[in-house]
Image 1 (cartoon, rainbow, N blue to C red):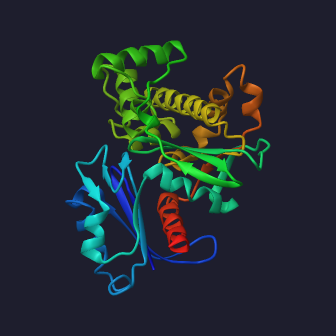
Image 2 (cartoon, rainbow, N blue to C red; image 1 turned 180 degrees about the vertical axis):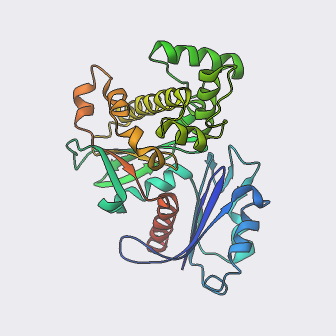
Length: 322
């Protein structure tokens, strides 16, 4: 059996999977609040008491973590944890155990996703020998590249969410100045993420309180999609345009002629806003690379467990190579 985890800044999914051709099959999946636990070992211990897990031989494990991975350890960016695989192996007798950056883990799911798990924003014309890329906004912003190496896709991690935010319009320049004054520098993650929605919303509303949404990301997007607040509508417009622009930047940097995928928890919830044209216009507005980008297929990942599936897929590959 395979143990997999997708450890995020807000919530974590743990799953027990059975190896299967191409795509491992889930036996048990649990979602928990990350900070309800003192660490990953504590979380796995609580998960392991389930009848489906208790006593099951854990042949391999993989955990996607929201932060940079160095060797066998990772310090999570938005959670006060340090994760060490040696601790997990000692405590639970697991076979090969690997940590991946959470977007690298999600990227391993991309080649095994089914058509029903994707929503096309741009059909494009995929180059079967081309690279792919993944961008995902949630609590933070993650990006990963899938390079074509010897005929197969190999995911590579990044911390691109912490790169500098590139403003393109007058209102984005105002946002850039506000973020720089508040934080010292402006990161892409401070705009394209849940915290980004809050930052934009704060600037748009100024000293006028928002009577429709408060300042929670989900409330802001709901008020915008239901047209209950002009400020929330503007907030979502800036967010979507910035998301599309950064997706276009990633497609250029990775030369993702095989496809660009939009994952994370926010995208499926704001699908009407992602498909109204703003995202794609910002994605394509990259002269002299516009012609190249018109051929890149762009899809939203609808499977909310893609990160967990990717971790399980990588763990299954570990079994093959051991």
